[in-house]
Length: 67
Ligand SMILES: [Zn+2]
Image (cartoon, rainbow, N blue to C red):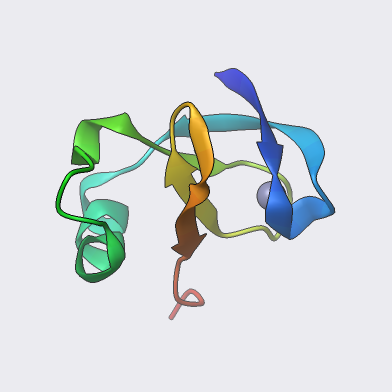
């Protein structure tokens, strides 16, 4: 895991991991065309569902709530 700034967590540093296949599907409609899915990370902080591009926290969004 890697430490990244998370806008959803008050811009604090959080641990991020790569997305699962399901998470990639959920994020896909919101990922800009020039951004590779393999560069996406998600926040592992308790209830946070933030995903964002590695190296550019301004490209990102929030995954839908769990079913
Ligand atoms: Zn977060």
